[in-house]
Length: 177
Image (cartoon, rainbow, N blue to C red; front, side):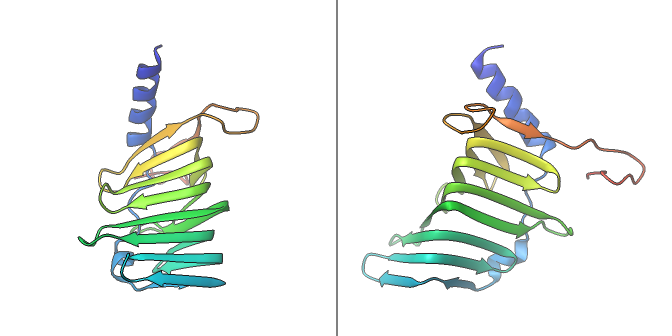
């Protein structure tokens, strides 16, 4: 199978099999709380930098990082870059008692493209389902993922790993909508 076909097959698998999407919608309307050891704000340039044990909380969403930089352009578009060893995040799934958890060395997010990119030994977990790769890109509008291998370390170095739990019917424990 060609590389292009493999990526397409993986993309289709992720698009239909991984229900990591649907983060708590009410979070968008909640205030953002940032705590850190230090912080700077340049209102003219629209840049804030937070350093040292940074914790960002908005509703059920929580990000932990060593450093977070947020920029805002004159049109109100925002980008967030979080760095850490690792950067971690956790957010409740809309309407369910489930959580999405992820980690990587870096998290980039921009409101212009609605792309969240986890880089460096990236992983996203929902219940017992897991996606691991060097780079995981998630489009928050289309709810599609792309996972790339690369220089990830470990026994499957350079490869992508997806673990999907079996589903059952008739109200079984692993039943997924």
